[in-house]
Length: 444
Image 1 (spheres, rainbow, N blue to C red):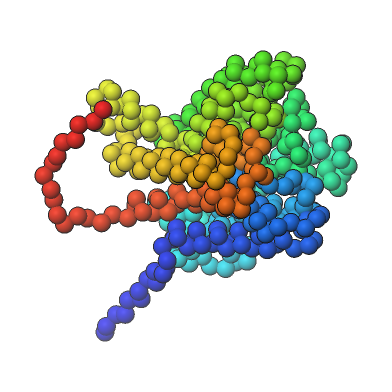
Image 2: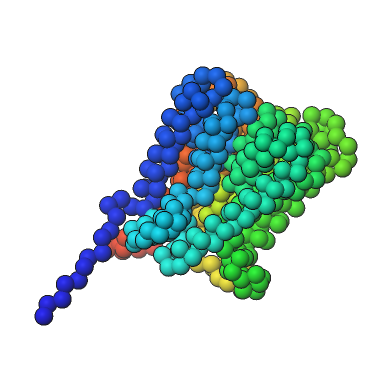
């Protein structure tokens, strides 16, 4: 009796490319939603709507209009929804919806989910998704409750609770959108704001795989290598950036110089923590010294963790680059860290990702300088902020014309979804049928 084997149906489009189309679709949806008359207090242009939608879906936070005054509660809700979907991951969000309605998650959906979560295997993805949902809801609910202690006494129950929920979602997803024109500067010395908001975006910036590992394991020795590198790297960057910012800006009258010393310490901690991922600020970014601005650009370029709500080349990528450099100077062929070994393939992926990222930032900065006369540092700062989906600005976002906005939107989009496509291309191997003799190139 002949057996009939059912062929496994493969997706017509590669998962990363389909995810990119879905992200673009949500941007289009957000653009039309924000253009509705009930979404804004006064008419906005299509360019304003498209820029805001792109910034929200890519969880960047760059704005061309004040979110709190330009948009109604409906418009703010649309922005918050775009932030939540963009930060959580579109396929993760879709699988959660399917699970809530008891619908099966097929093989094709698992492939897309695997790419969205940057996983190498399609097993245990649903369990990982459920853990992500628990972590997200728990962090955002606790964060909203704590922020309500500050916002409700000042704005009342209705408006205060809305502000607490909006900023909790924005903070955990590292979006940087705020309902106040000066971001969170009026609470520069408030302990609740300075502890709750950084805790939210640090948790979101660690990455869902790290959160899942911590949730399941809760033992340093049993953590994966990725989790150990992320925790150690994040702690080191936070300590270094906090101390550096305090030393460089302590006497600057435009930032820390006008504050009391306790507020200076709070501001140093908050601004150093938010720079790599979130985009909130408690001091005026336009008043930073040139040295501090350059340091911030470096931190924004590094960004947060893989599969996180943040952008950048990722902390683990930066660490592997440093480890590869150290191994080279020690004449070692392999990289050893936490009793594990990293192979040449991973180093090559890191080099490819970093090279493409550097070229993207340089090309975008060059194009902006061609069409917009202005401060080079401010334009470069804006470009790096867009690529890292950070959202900090030296005050020039609203000065760009439609062409400049298009460039920034493209950089935000690539900074958010580009690594997925690059990872897919690097993971696709085509064995070579032709071999060549080894050659020598003199370097340095």
